[in-house]
Image 1 (cartoon, rainbow, N blue to C red):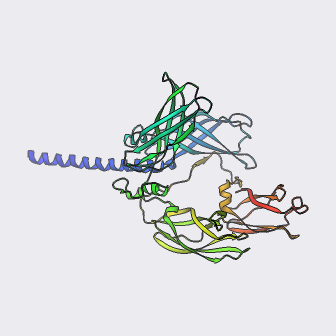
Image 2: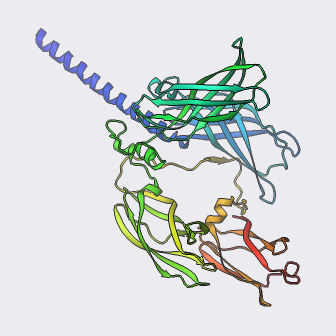
Image 3: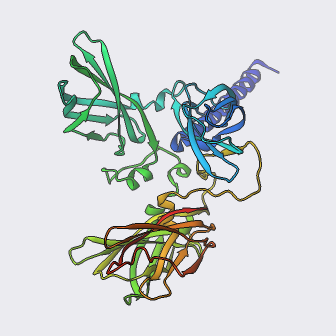
Length: 487
């Protein structure tokens, strides 16, 4: 082989390896962006754990908790949520704080972790999940929020006497990067005249910010924990949440005309945001006769690459002045609304036992199914959890207030006849148990009654409700709401 041929061969070989390295680098960069985009806590999970002390009325201590980090990011400031159950399946939750970090693609054991509580009972079953965690930017200089967002104007005065406040007359910051952010976290450090640090406070500003955008949050007055000799403050940015351009718009971003070029690849930009993707074109009443169940025909256009199901609507009933006098929720679960398609569906409002002049309808949430977008990750709900023991018996978990309002509708009631009853509807996909109804009479007296259960996607009339102690004299029932429920 002559010298020229050898040079050509080695040059081609070198070019090949450089090309491979280039694409590997691009793939790594894409992974970083993907993980940054959704914080990727779905890849941060509990592998195993072991109790050290779990006796009632003592401090809970774990001998170890093992965490697996399968993302391309490192994390610190990890907060775990521990869920424990007693022998009757009553749920109790408490946090555990880990003041340590875990590297990308690492499995790590954290020893002797304790919570600052006393156990209300001896746990029979335990689950642990990741609640929150902060990203470590040590190897990710291009993405560090404190380098991508700069503080511009700052003018303030300190009142360290009685009120102990800092009043900002100028307070603005600029996004000098090509990324979109929200939930900008500021650290406010308080110093005396000798520049000795007195205290620190954090401030989170939720407004999203686009590349090149400047945001001002002055005038602003904050109550600050400080001594009487406070003299100056220093302001710094310590964190921010990276978001997609689409999320920026959906979150109320101020810059509506944005040229999005070479910022994220298409799979990252096209995320599922139901309130943004589903557009209510028009609606018409099918039935709105007073004291009957209202029916609305909704024409919806799905302007996305996702199919949507289990769409939760919120209906606001307005008076003549445009003020909201009532609101109801309805979940549509029959069929998917297909991507890039239009559909007319029926929405039930519950019983219309009040007068109104107009309505407004908004979309609260929906479950998405990816259709033609490849390599787009499904964002998992947290916490991901691992059970120490497997118990097959039914566990009853108290529902959050928002869950109750989304799941249970009071369809009809009659407390005037001898056969008093309540008719409820469960619009969720889960059975609901131990439903507690809170009633108030015209004298202000309250009573909580416990009803039986409701099967998923069903309605039931509960007969012979005893309200004799509330309906004394001329008293009437003036308020009815679902107080508690379990699933």
